[in-house]
Image (cartoon, rainbow, N blue to C red; front, top):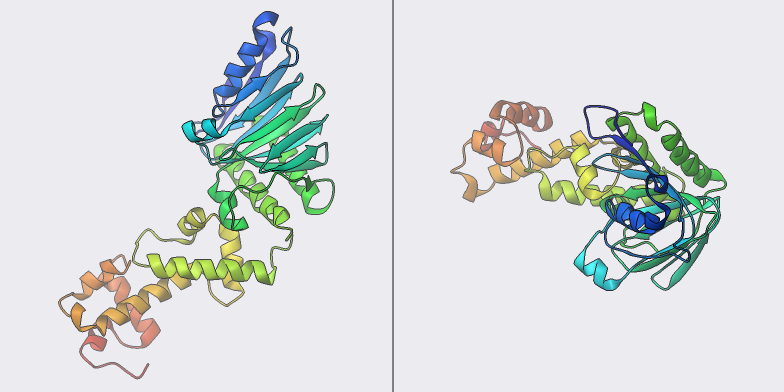
Length: 325
């Protein structure tokens, strides 16, 4: 059963082995999981009358699946990783039973109240017992790699029974419970927040105003703005998406030092214009040329911002009529 709940990309789909003959259910399950996950191997201790069900919510950005099945083992080999690449992560949250995950020579034994991040960009083994039910949240790789400053987080247990972990667990459960009442932007917004909190939890830093955390964000943001200031499409939102941080994290980091994404971008663009005005090799460029080459939408927008910042117009600075800066 598939239901399209809006004109956007948010979809809810329920599939069950009850749709097919008992003798065909393991094949059905392998084909069904393989329709939305990359290549894996499947091992079924029992192939007679296998039972399973998935409730899948997805947009172009995220996917949340509640899965229930009899005992099954999944594995992804190095060859499958090479031939069918997928760098995204899966957050596994058991609801009942036990799931054992092995990756990067580490093992996580997951029961309700725990969870782990698994990278599909590296080989792994995952064994689900006959009583296991779980949530599986697919997370784009850049949403994890940037904040954690690393790739392929170790398959290690996360405590989701208290504190920030319990909040993450509850948000994922609520995201599933309200599946029939969400829109595309709402599903993505909640998922963004879950991932942001998850990264804090995985890095053992659950304080959004941590000095170390915000200093790291500020350093990265300043470097990125310096390198991309001339891009007219540069905004706080586009920067957050590229760097893998949330916009809120970037705003907090810059607020701590008295600025905002918009102000930082404008300041860097103005600095770029001032350097070019002082450069003899740029004398052939008109003020309009300088404006477009530095990320401003027009010469008038540049002139207004430049005068506010430096007290003179770009033309006055070029011709030596500038005030003392």
